Every structure is written in C-alpha cells, then in structure tokens.
Length: 150
Ligand SMILES: CC(C)(COP(=O)(O)OP(=O)(O)OC[C@H]1O[C@@H](n2cnc3c(N)ncnc32)[C@H](O)[C@@H]1OP(=O)(O)O)[C@@H](O)C(=O)NCCC(=O)NCCS
Image 1: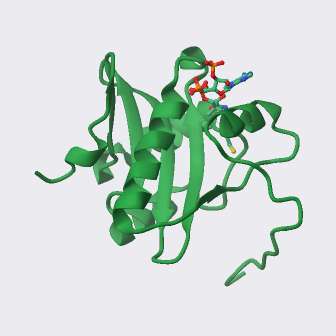
Image 2: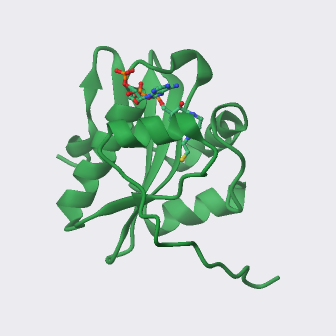
C-alpha cells in the first residue's frame, strides 16, 4: 500500500506527503509559520524538490487545514531536515514531534543513519524543539557555502 508509512494519526492530525497541487499553499504557509526564508522558497524551488523526490515534503493537516511542514531530504548519503514549521496557532501540541517522527521513519526506511538540521543560533524555541526530539548541536562544524549560478 503506497505511502502507508507516513499516515501517522495523532487525534485528528494527519501527516502525508505533499503533492504538486499543495505547493502554493505551502509557500503561503511558510510566510507566516517558518523562521526566515530559504533560498529555495519559490515555486521553482519546491517543484524541483518534488520532481526529484516526491515523498520528501511532509505536511501535517488538522481537519484538512495545513498546520505544519517538514522536508525530509535523503540523497543516498545524508538525511537532512528542512523547513520544520508549525502554524503559530497550533504550537505546543506535538505537531513538530509528529512531523519529525514521520521524517525519521522515512529516513530509516531508506537506510539513513543520522538525521541533521540547520538551526539558527538565536532560535531558542527551535533549540528546545530539536532538543526534545533528541537532536543536539555539533559545535565543531560551521556551514561553508557558495551560491551557484549567480
Ligand atoms: C519550532 C517549532 C517547529 C516547534 O513546533 P511545535 O509543534 O510547537 O513543537 P511540539 O509541540 O512538537 O514541541 C515538542 C517539544 O519541544 C519543546 N518546545 C517546543 N516549543 C517550545 C517553546 N516555545 N518553548 C519551550 N519548549 C518548546 C518542548 O519540549 C515540547 O514538548 P512539550 O510541549 O511537551 O513541553 C515551532 O515553534 C515553529 O514552527 N517555529 C517557527 C519556525 C522554526 O523556528 N522552525 C525551526 C527551524 S530550525
């Protein structure tokens, strides 16, 4: 049964993979729910993600309304989590916890061994949420980046 692994239910919470038709709603959602913006926060960016990995973006819905997102990206080597965001009116109800559980289940199913996330130093709420889910910082790393095709 395709996709049954992400059909988590927590009371009326449903977690499922995003489909192309969800993407405008997701982009709007991030404007109010996400922390900052990402370089890939546009139609092209999210379409490319789903074209490459149709199950990478997980949505949490309550009564059909989008209340949370996370991207669970696995490239065959590393398991990266991006865009963990919960609607401000639905926080502290375990939605991020449920999204991360679904993402981790996906990673394990695909053979992933360790999950990671980029977390801003100043985002203390996120530190608490990631910490509660079992993640911890590795202080000896810095992200080194180079914009491509500028
Ligand atoms: C961070 C975020 C995703 C957490 O979502 P959430 O659904 O509220 O998290 P949960 O309800 O699953 O919280 C799980 C645990 O994390 C910790 N936690 C979460 N938010 C917290 C807060 N504001 N203060 C203290 N602890 C918090 C608690 O231990 C909590 O368990 P508890 O409620 O039983 O005490 C949400 O606050 C958010 O969307 N913030 C803006 C976007 C963002 O910063 N994303 C992270 C980017 S790295």
